[in-house]
Each structure stands twice: as structure tokens, then as C-alpha cells.
Length: 144
Length: 144
Image (cartoon, rainbow over all chains, first blue to last red; front, side, top):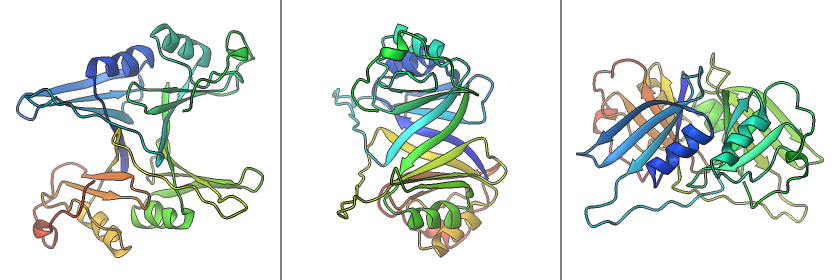
């Protein structure tokens, strides 16, 4: 038995790629656009850790333009990733316009949300980093 | 960067252990009951694949007995696992009273839901198995 992936639905594939690939730093492994099925599937993973993936499912709008919308539920919590430098990871997210919902004030843990509200936890690999500004005095924003 | 886990919230830790450990076959890695924080955290993973985990978060009821309840949201899709024998995996789930929402009619894919509505996809590792009863003629039940 082997874990393969966590699938999340997205409403904007380009916005989702900016978040998961460009801002969060996951590697794009594959993308399949199905004209017949009117869906796009994207698989991403942490660089060097291809065995545990995230699948993005984008269902194309109906021919009349009607698009699916997605809300979140509390039964799902978050996806968690270890990062080598939590400040650098949060800076890259912020540089891409992502709100740091729970800044890494402790040099150890941060939370952000995807464009569709999926909560992502970042944890510093190994020991916490020394407290550093601007993170140490940055307030929480919203929920995560 | 490394994927660590997907966290889900659960309303009944024992029912969740029956599902994730006994019926689905994940291995219990750790359990922490915090009297002070009034929560229980459980980590599980596929046997032999400890690097990709599932975290169950159980928030204990308030002193007055008020308990949290969780609904699902469409932005989260499912967790996916490869299994060596999808029929044996589904039989074990059924033996534990789990509804096979999407039976493996094709010998390749099945879906079930956790007690809190988290959708789990099972995929046959390698080639699909030959079609076999009772699975081949089993109808879908609900959504997944």
C-alpha cells in the first residue's frame, strides 16, 4: 500500500499554478487537458519528492459559461510540507501576493491558503530558525 | 521541501481508527492525547511508507458536552492510495461496515468515505485486475 496524492478541485488553473508551483515551489510533473472530458488534471510534488503528489482537478466551464464554484469544509484540515528555510518560503509566497495567514513568528510554522481556500502548513525542517523580522511581529490574518 | 501529511478533523477518534487503521489498513504511527489542550492527534501511514502521513485531529467536546461537527467542502477532493489487491482492500473495508461508494467494477479503482466524509480513492497498483464478482456488478452508492 502506498500513498499517491491528495486531490483538490480548482476554479482557475493558471491562478492555481501560480500558487502551487510559482509561489509555494512545487514542481509541475504533468498536465493533461482533456477537450473531450472538458477537464484539466495537473500533478505537482515537492522537488525531489515525486512519490507524494498533489493533483489539481479543473473542470472547465459549461458551454454556456456556467462554472463550478467550490467551498471549503472543516473535515479537511490542511496539507503540510517541510521546508528548508521557512522565512524564504514565506517571502516567496508573499512576493507572489499570497497572504501569510499565520506568519512564522516562531521560526517554525506558517499557514497560507490556496486560491480555492485549501490550507497549507509549512514547517521548518529540523530546529526552528531564530526569530526574525518582519515575521516575528507580523499578526495573523483571517483563519487557516 | 518535502510533503509531510494531510490533516483531517474527526469527530470520533475510535470510529476513525476503525476506518483508517482497521478497515483501510493504514499503520498507526503515534497518538497523543492532550488533557491540557483537550485534543488528540493521531498519525497514520501506509505500512512501509511512513514518509507520507495522515494526521487525524480530534478536538474533545467542551466541558458542557458541546462537540464540534464537520461538514465537507468541494475544494477538497480525496486522498489516493495504491493497493496491491483492490478486491481484498474493498473486502476488508466492507467487512468493517464501510460502504463501497464506487466499487472496483473495472478491477482498477474504488472510492469510499471516512466517517467524517473524507473521500478516499483506492487504485490497483500496476495493471487492473480481471473483472470479478461481486464487484463487477455492484452499483455505485451515493457520491464520493
